[in-house]
Length: 250
Image (cartoon, rainbow, N blue to C red):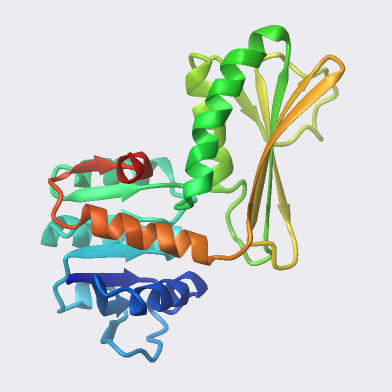
């Protein structure tokens, strides 16, 4: 049985992961990390360096501020890490890349299988439509408790498009301070926050007299937890290196 250390076990996603794992005979949560020290059926530690329980793999749904110490712990203990937290700085991403020489890390902006399919579809659409004059915009919507904007998924979608277009695009997040026409090489990225929206992403390809939209709607947080647990079972025992959901789903 695969033993999981759950970072951010007191948060909303942590509770969903806990529920998914409890119904899975192939894995179990043996410890959690959360500064709030929530009550749980397993030992919970306030910080990674206080954790005394070994595990086969870590699942992280926490905050960007909590990730550096977790990366240190994963590298020191050589514990594979499924890193689901978004909004990471370039400095933390570099730290993550450095840690992959010590342990396996799976990084994804979104653990949903459907969203990972969207990454592939937007690349095909961009390759087919951009040279015909289509403009590209990404609109993401999330609940009013989400603290990072735009979402990591929106940025990952834009990056997928940019890679398909030989990295000649640039991102525009706010047009309120400029009065000028849209440039051909823009990808507009827009964030909406409100209510209890789990997560919605629309990728708009707007051409002359026609518009094509690729959309994904998350109906519950459970889809992210299911993907994270699937990724954890894949990553346990893997050699050091950087992995993605594409590796899990291939």
